[in-house]
Length: 193
Image 1 (cartoon, helix red, strand yellow):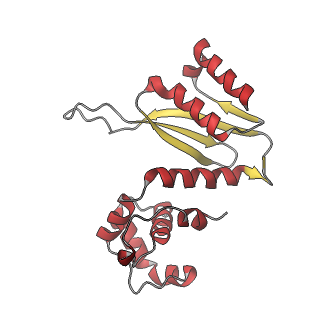
Image 2: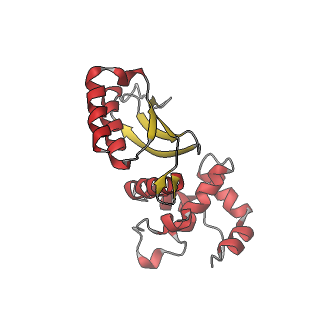
């Protein structure tokens, strides 16, 4: 399964008449631009404009001109994020599977982090917390999810482990998960898997 195949499965909310630029290619080119160092929509737009002839030739898109920065922003910001995350999870899970079986000696690191700069003192909003599951062998993130606070991290870890249901995997977790209550939850999941 290719990344483009995954992106083609993301639902496009736009009207049929307003689809001059295919969603999957906007997303794919945005991902490539970010991998090449783009930090925002201006950079993504510049990347697509600069590499337009090559992208058009390689991916056989029929665009007459590159999309504008505002159009890229509008398209990307209106993507269904749950569908996009589900697509990325299935794609990354497929990468760590070897002929349908989990690769041997798979080590997954699961950790939650507070995002720097996400606290808003003026609006009295607490910092955003993100939980990530990282495959240390392939060096890819298999999944990430927002968590309301550090206390809910254990519940989210259990949800991810239940969702992926991988056999023969070594999980690394931080000290937060060594409490008896949390270990009992993990033991339940381990017996299910």
